[in-house]
Structure formats: C-alpha cells, structure tokens
Image 1 (cartoon, rainbow, N blue to C red):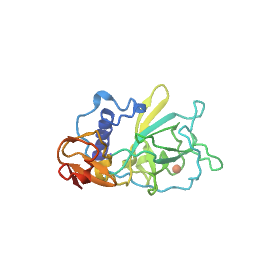
Image 2 (tube, rainbow, N blue to C red; image 1 turned 90 degrees about the vertical axis):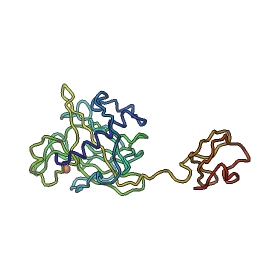
Image 3 (cartoon, protein in one colour; image 1 turned 180 degrees about the vertical axis):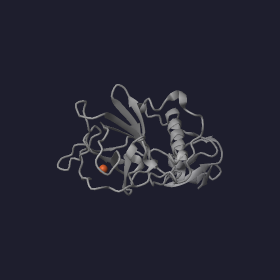
Image 4 (cartoon, rainbow, N blue to C red; image 1 turned 30 degrees about the vertical axis):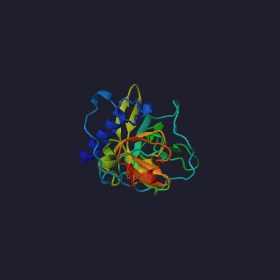
Length: 258
Ligand SMILES: [Fe+2]
C-alpha cells in the first residue's frame, strides 16, 4: 500500500456513515465492524481521492443485462460478494449511479459471445452497490482484476479496474494500481467478500437558494433557517411562526434575501 492516507480516509468515512445518518441497513456487513468505528470526523474537502481511471481493455461489451448477480451457487469458482459506496467529491453518497461490471470466469476467459459475468446495476438511494460474482480467474499477462464502468447521472463515464490484495502478479502487472485495491476477506467455508468505494468527479456543493426547504405557513422558524419562496432564497432573521401575510418578501424584519 503506498497510499495509506487514502485507505484510512475511506475507512473513516465508511465508519462514520455506518454510525451516522446515512445508515445503509443492507450493508450490515461484517466488514463494517460496529465496535471498531472510530469517532473521527470524516475529512474530505478536496478531490484528491478521486478513483483513478484505467484502460478498458479488449473485452468490454455494451448492453449488458441489468443484474447484480453474475454467479449462482453452482458456478465454478470462489464465490465473491463485492459491496461499496459511490461518492462525489464532497464524500456524499451518490444514488442512481450506473455500474457496469465485466470480468473473466474461473478459467480466466471472457464471454465474448454472450453476457456471462457481465451485468450493470445502479446504486440505491444510499449510494450503495452490491455485486454477487466469483473471484475472476487469471489470464496471461494480467493480475487478477474486475473491470467496471461507473457513471453518475449525466456525468462522464469512469472506466477502471479493481484489484485483489496479496496477488503475486500485482508486482509485475504494469496496469496494477494500489489505489484500486479492494478490501477482501475470507468468508468461510469457501467464499470471499470484498469492499470498494468509488469517488467520482462530481461536485457536491451546498444546497441551492433556500437550502432546499420551501417556506410553509405554520412552521416555526429560528434565526438562520433558510427557505425557498417563489424560487428565491431567504434567511430567517428572527424566530417566529410563519403565517399567511408574512411571506418572506413581505416581511424584511423576519427574512433577508440571500
Ligand atoms: Fe481484463
């Protein structure tokens, strides 16, 4: 690992998410070990953790099936479940992100006539994806890897590859990048589970005017609250209960345009 800061940042972020507001209940995973959650504040204020791109390689095929499961219990190979988040640059999870995975089978062969070990899916509302597959086999010239294209709605496609720790060929594969190492654990008796979080080049600024909340009569506002009214944003100056006739533009003593 030549990038320990990268890993620890993601580890902290994952722990914070697991312990905080955005709890993805489906991710009650062994790897999100509750007792080990540090109490640090997630720190992510720039884009230096963006997931790096990699070459597509010769075996991508468009129009893969929509599915998260690429292997069954009868599929030859070591069962592997890969889960993770897709984040934007502000480290907030991104929903509805397309992930299109493709990989070799247990023998290191790609299915170029059909769609075996090919599938696309979308992150859920919590920004989480799950892929059920097998550990891909090795083929000449490469270390073990999984290909993926990741695309947030209306954003550019990130094409990259994910790698397995401890693979001897990681040292000799010119494409290998430690920033793309998954965290992989054995899941006895014969399975493995892996985790990887993507960080996409997607700006995630503060909410727009009004903070995304619409002014509503009957609501009690306190100084500093932000609302939207008729498309404009306002900041509350004095605590009060909103009522008809006290619309933000009509009462400058209560609301300041922003
Ligand atoms: Fe490949």
